[in-house]
Image (tube, each protein chain N blue to C red):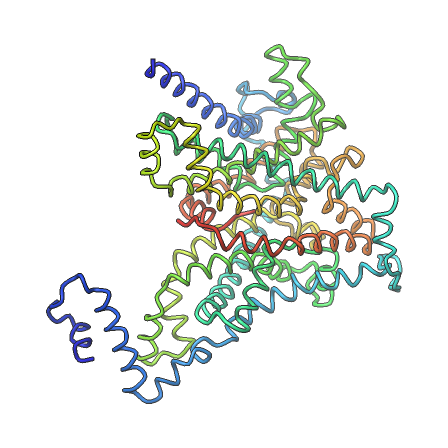
Length: 337
Length: 275
């Protein structure tokens, strides 16, 4: 112990650097002994429960419990009732709301399917485009890489609502920029009713969402790419591997945890999408682009609270089933800056 | 041969990069140009520069769109909720990270689950009514703090894990109480993560649109996003004014983005941003 205290006070470094780990260990154990033996009362203070009191978590826990968790639970309870805005009476109706959604060919099934299609397609599009851009913008031959990265990332900081409004004006069939541009270069036949044509509207919405989200995926994947040691590529080059082989056998396997993490986030975003669709099409034309959350808002403004909360609860339960994988994938992430 | 091939690759790569950047920038440039046009000129959106620069468009928008009051509303909501958020989250993350077992472990996973779970806005209305928070400023501030807690806790928890415990021990030997330990010793060390949380959450709140749509029905309390949406509905045919309004709404966020780029990109890569 004396030796350890000597070291702590910077006495001559007798043992050299090789045993520095042992030295550090020695110092640490010495300190612990001093802490626990030499001074009365301190030992009590080192008790974890007292030093890190539980009520420090209280603020976050109460706010989160009241405004996030409780509504979820109450929502599930009310989904078995006929709660609405017109009477103050709330009656228990069993599974009636759920039956109304899943039985026959209701519009609600369409909303649920739309949500799933939106989630799958945008996740794939964003990941593919983001990965391609990340690969491109880490190559040596591309000029102004940082500028490109910044520009492509910038939509990420804009509000979904504003992006929706920007594209609502860009895609306007007669006055919008896109159609004007297509006409001016002689491609009149390509100028379409992007946001009112039943066949085109959903792909348009998903493309706009990709436009906003691709930069985020790109930045995360770039961080992952930069963390891969260049030694691997060098060794592969010496062995005569082609670009494609290097990509398949080095880059992809090492990026896997990041790609999974990003995919999970995209999926949870896609399932909850609201702002983008509300501002671009408001679920229209008809209900061609309606998703669960726009339907919830529609029911809410109609005053049919029970149906709104039932739709919300279905989404809640669906995500709950995926929750284990979501949390696992978040904790496995290997990017850090 | 290899040289030519490489040159072709390099040209193609650069062209693709430039085209992608243009695809992202052009909508914003078109809006900027259109915001200076007269109403008739703006009817056909193009990259053509305006014949006469109409700077007064912006004055009209600021007056008609109630932008000043909604700007300050947004600023108030974002600042207050982020301050509350940082206070409760850093305290919670500190205790959870230092004593990760039993009830703390449960609390951690309980809150972290909120990153993925959707919020039931209809039932939330019921809770807000019971707590008398509907249509009030502090209600929306608390709500914003609540919905951003999970992700912030996740990021903050990860950061506190990197601060050595020996610091706590040294502080305790010098006679620190738990409260002092947190405020005097740990909090100053959290500066980097607090900056990241501040920027990320500020932008998330500033950009949000759902919460005021549900819980604020008084236009005097609207933040900028809702004000611009409303303006869009009323002036749908004056594209020049709408463009100016959108540009003014984008401006604060773009400025924060350029100033706080380091924290945003760092935070994005460290965890996740979904705003």
